[in-house]
Image 1: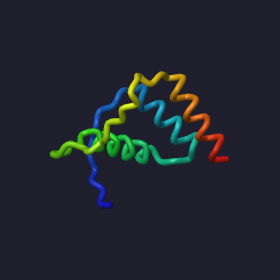
Image 2: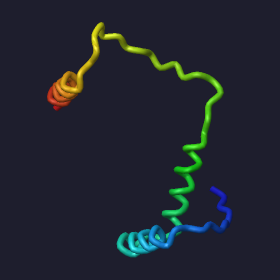
Image 3: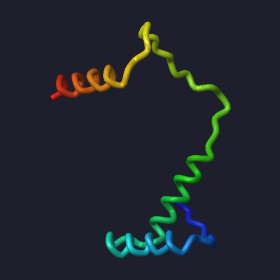
Image 4: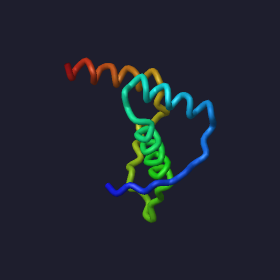
Length: 79
């Protein structure tokens, strides 16, 4: 991965938090900024085509409780 140097202005409090985390975790501050830039870059991506995500019709509205029970059952069966 080729890196390019850039300059950005950041909020002082945010910078202080990054400095503290870098010191605490033993990571360079630059890693945090590269990660943040990468996440921002991913957020800007757009796709020309529609996604082919199927719609599921259960014949009735699905409640949060029904979802919770189904997931709990699946996790229990998986163990």
